[in-house]
Amino acid sequence: MSQLEQRGLLVTDRDKALEHLERIGYYRLSGYWFAMRERSGVCCPLDPTTGRKPAKVKTETLALDSFKPEASFQNAVDLYVFDKKLRLLVLDALERIEVALRVDVSHRLGRHDPFAYLKPELFHNSFGRDLDAQTGLTPHHAWLDNQARLINRSREQFIEHNRRRYGLPLAIWVACEVWDFGTLSRLYGGMKETDQDHISALYGISNGRVFATWLRSLNYLRNVCAHHSRLWNRNVIDQPKLPPKEEVPALAAFHDDGQLRARPFLLLCITHHLLKVINPASQWGHRFKTLLAEEFPDLQHLGLNLRGMGIDPDWSSRDW
Image (tube, rainbow, N blue to C red; front, side, top):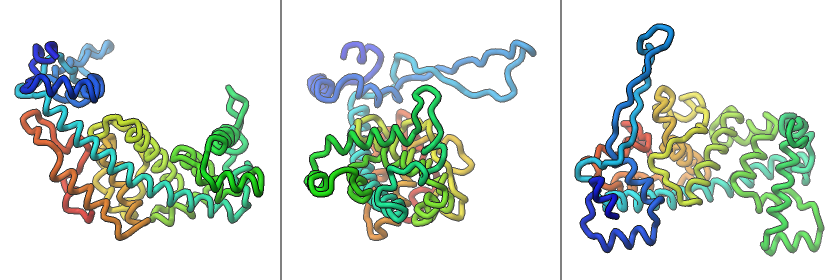
């Protein structure tokens, strides 16, 4: 604590701050006060061939040990609390999306065969037939191995009932109930294009390969939330592809702004779009908008605001 104070972090209630450190942890909280540290510009190295600065210079900064003026320990705690509420709200939405997509995928594949997930010929070659050079297995083999573990460790009564009465393998509409978001996403990614397109069309997306990137990114989002990691200004490396603007107008602002696409607000807009299809009467969007508008802490003195999430200027005027 003394080191933080020496670096300029204001601690108004030392006992309470120590209590937060013991309950939340130093390194978890440090992710929230990191954005409150001073920054120093980094000089761009000269081009060794011309002796000049590159034509396209990407501005880079380094975080210093010292904190910005008026940065406080309580600011970091307030940001942590907001982020926790955000993660819980997102998990609530992703649970509903996961359940709906299980039904969509299992019904589509079940039309081909009750045990379609076992048959590599029902999937794209890159998933069902192409061997990994290192393991000698197909992605389908790896997927089946993972599903077998999920079934074996499941204690759900309906799984036990089906195993006793019908034995293995389980029909796909039973087996799908043990899939987590990652298992679901990988199976969808391996489906043939016609099947992918059929499912994505249910959500207003004509290209199933675009939709596959959505599921992969939402699985990443789910893992961030489930592991209690910082979400609000996280840099999203594996970004989803965007459909044509006319298919999802709410995502139009992200097409021409790479910085916005690298932040989590894009994934939250995708989450909202899917929820509106699954349950048009859902109040999730309203709760989400209220959280952002009313519960993000006032950190203007530190130059921190909702823009750090990747929010576009017109976000509040859209239909939530």
